[in-house]
Each structure stands twice: as C-alpha cells, then as structure tokens.
Length: 275
Length: 325
Image (cartoon, rainbow over all chains, first blue to last red; front, side, top):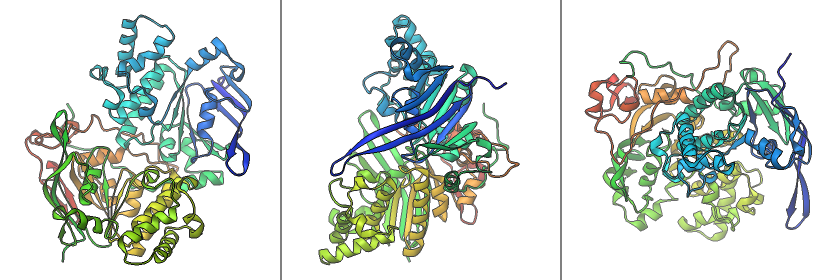
C-alpha cells in the first residue's frame, strides 16, 4: 500500500483581479485547477516558464497566499481552513527559501541572529541555547562559526543562500519549498547546494518542493518533475524519464530549449590524492 | 594585419578600504579576430566583467589598470582620450549587460532608445535614425518592429527587452560586441531563443563577439573558441567540445562536472552534480603559485611556488597547469 502523502492539493485555483489603467479590471487565473501530491521524503520539482503560476502555487501551499478555491491536505488535515495557533503550527512545518537571499535576509542582523530569530519569535530556549543551536545549524549547511557575526552583505551569494537554508531549518520543518533557490548561483555552488540538500534529506527526513525554470538542473536533482503551463500541471513524470519520453507538447518545448553539452569528463585520474 | 581585439597581460586592481587592493585581472591575454565569436567561461568574481569594462574604458573610479595593453584594430585603447573613446563606444565596439531592465529608460519608447544610438554616432537626420532603428528591430527578430518601437520597456517580456538592448548595441553596426551574461536574467525558453538569435546575428553581420557567461549552453552554441577564467587569469583555451568534454585544467574539469546533464539515452544513469570543494582565493591576497592549488586534487609541491606558464599541448589549445608542462 502506498504511503499516505505528506501534502495533497486538489483543484487549487487562484484568481487575481488585475486593474488596468484604461480598460477596467481583468481577471487572471494564476492557478486554474492544480492537483499535486507530495510523498514524504520525496524531492519534487515544479518547472515552468515565467508567469506559469509556479510561484503562486508554492505560496498557496505554504499558505502565504489564499487560494480562491480547492483544498490542501497536509498530513491528512485540510490546512486551507486553519487559523490562529494551528496555522502557526502548520507554518513551522512548511518553510520557504526564496531566490534572492540578499533581499530575504535582514541586512542589519548578523548571520547567527538571522538563524536564531525564528526560535526567538517562538520563545524557544535561552539566548545562549539559541545561539548554540544557530551555530550548529550554520555548521550543518557548511558555514563555519567564523562567519557567525557577519552581516548578509558581507557574505558571498552562495553563503547567503546557505544562511537562508539554515534559518528555514531552524524550526525543523517537514516540507521545504525552494523557490528558484538555485537561480543565479554559479554551477559549482549549485552543485554544493545540491549535495547539501541530499545530505539533509537523509538526516532530517525532509520533503522538498523545488521550484525552478531550469529543467536540466531539476531533472538531475529531483525524483519527480511536475511541468506547469498556464496555471495547470500539464505533466508529472519521474525525473529519469522526462527527457526520454516527454508527453505534453509544452514539456517537449522545454526539453528542446535545453542546450546540448558535450558529455561530462571523467574524474581526474592520476596525480596525488587529496590530503 | 592586427587582430580585431588584442589584450596583452592586462592587470586591473580595485582599491579597497580594507587595505590591500583586489587584483581582479592578473595578466589576461586574449585575441578576438574579426567575425569571430569567443566565449569567456568563469564564475562570479573571476574577473570577466572587469575585463569587459576595461576594454571599453568603463571601469569604475576605484579600479586602476596597472599593466598590459588593449588594442582594437591596432589602436591602443588604454591611451585613448575620453572623447575619442565615446566616439568608439556604440559605433565600433558595443556592450550588452545582463539585465535589460537596467539598461533601458523606463519612461521612453524603445524605438526612440534604439534610434538615439544611431543619432549619437551617425551624421544623419532623425528620420533616417528612426528608419535604422526599425530595420534593426526587425533584424533582432521582431515581426512587427513598428509596434514594438512604440512600446515602453515594461510592456515587453524579459526576452523582448534583451532583444531591444541588442538592437541598440548593433544599430551602428559595430565590429565587436561585448556581452556580459546576456542570457542570465531570462527563463530557459527565452534563453534558447536569445542563443539562436546571437548565433544568427554573428554569422549574418560578421560580428566579432566576446561573451562572458556561466551559461554553458550559450557559450557552446555561439563560440568557436572558449576561454576559461579563474581568479583573474585565463587558465585554459580550446573549442567548446574540447574544453567541456576533454578539459586539461583541473578547474575546468571540476566546473564541467558541476553542470547538470539530463539523461537523454535510456541506458545512461543519472549522474549527480559533482561540487568543487572549497572556494576561490581572496584576490586581495593572491597566491604566489597556482590560484587553484588549494582546491586541486592533483596538486604537486611545485604548484605553490610559481604561477605555471601557459603551454600549448595541441594546436589551438592552451592551458596553465604543471600537469601539462
């Protein structure tokens, strides 16, 4: 019997009223009936072009945005109706990491304060305990404690993205949504982030929803890929099969847009081993 | 006959309040021939943008060229005065940056913004300049140039805006186009369109291009030669297939393996992305030896002592690494 899903969205719609200067208002259906199921421990990618609705979906799933209609079950409970303490409890379990960590992190706080702030808001532990925990989380994402007192703008782009991840992990979420969290990072930093997510998934039983326009990267990082187009999921496939047998015309267009690279070289042979 | 662009041993420092100046370019040598597209692959902070800005004399006030030469059609650009440089920029050498939203004036129609480049450099009336702008907008792939010309930047998509910026850059038919991450702000389908457009323009206009990017797809689609930059220096050169598929420098090998390659044959398994351990050196204190040595799995005792000289192990291939000396 298949495991109960961690999250299940059914028939989600989101309608925005767009006011236009000359022509009155016009309704835009950012989500036009989305069904999505995330199994616990899975890494699922949501791929689409700008304006396909993927970020709206991510924000609705984290309840940062109210869907116009539809249901979202998390652990078997419909969370669209939650409020107060139960909504806060849900939000601890679902954390969001955004593309531009420089914009998402307070420029005035120091790295360790940024990571411990969620704990402080929830009144967890003493100041010393929170700092110790923040340093532990930073170490887990590969940020040495020497960086604890730096401010976000004194860190590199890759380090800031790790810091945002450490903060998101502070509340021990079960679902982590990364919205274009790899975009704009150098390839070698993307690869470091990918390895980190894989390690964390094993250690912390995390489920990931990766939102991106980069189909090539997602096909390598995720177990499953859901393709969004005009507010709908038009295809949901095993990542390993996506480039072999794309079914929907839009998936084929996205696959065709991926550049062909020469095959990867082998690992270096010979020479002295790394000490 | 001189090449189109010749850069020799270019060194650029940025003054820093913290003390030691940052050595952003540390002896860069490269050539671009007329009509040739050359790619510059490197990660954030490697000095790609500094190099392009230095060519055009657009370095910020905190930067200083401390050595080397930059020649365009034999003319020494570093010795050129500001007014001569202004006549050259846009007319003979143009540049396209990453974010077209920042490059365009939000409150002017885009057609006028293309036409004003022609107006600045060509001895012709406003009407001819508008016609040139429309012709150029058609050239960058707009089916209805007149309609696009009347649009404001916010009415266009990111890909359309980048095409407008390319029309601005090329309306005076420069011989050399510098491009700094031109695809980075676009989504994947718009990236694919822009790659195809740049390749078509390059062939049709016989344009010399020097494109800095970390988009391997754009670099391999466009360039005949690919240069790899690390910590302010060119460490490897070859065709895209050679550099990415059979790299000589350990950094290039690591970088190529860090890029995602989708599974496109049924029998191939998924290969994970392989990170390069560590981080690039602090260029306020550049190492005496090879800058990649601390991260290199194949390092040798000699690597910390001196910077390896560039060697040519095969025709058209260059590398700075003791493994090939």
